Structures are given as structure tokens and as C-alpha cells.
Image (cartoon, rainbow, N blue to C red):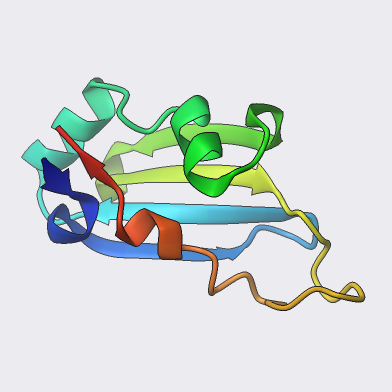
Length: 103
């Protein structure tokens, strides 16, 4: 098994507006990025299961070769700044990706 944490240079989350969150996985090298992206390892179904959300909440999973990155955007469960929302910047939502493993 390969740990995403070991092959990614950056794993982060951030707001993509008040109603969306974006997750970035930026790989250390081109070969690992190409392998990960070409095999469709991170699909909407995989991400939804990892985060315990409905697959319909996953808006996109996009490979971005210039940055050796895979970007995932989801519908934000609670809009940024709304009552009960605990991460106004969306910067603390990437934790489940840190433990993600694939083969």
C-alpha cells in the first residue's frame, strides 16, 4: 500500500467560496502524479466514502498536470461563517486525506 502522505508534497483544504471546499493533492514528482491520475484512484465515490458524504456532494475531481495536482471540490456542509460552522477558512478539512492509502 502507498500512503498518500508519503508521495504528496502538499495536501490541503481551503474555501472555494462560501459554499464550496477545495482539496489539493500536489505530488512530489511527475511520475507519481501521472500514475495516480491515470489510474483514477481518487474518484467522486472514493472521496465521498472517505469523507462520509453523499457522492452528489462531490462537484469535481480534476487532474491538473502543470501543478502535478489533483483537485477535489465539494459542496460545503455548512456555509462559511454560518452559525455552527467551525472552520471559516476551510483550512482544517484535509485530515482524512492524510491517512488515505492506495495500491
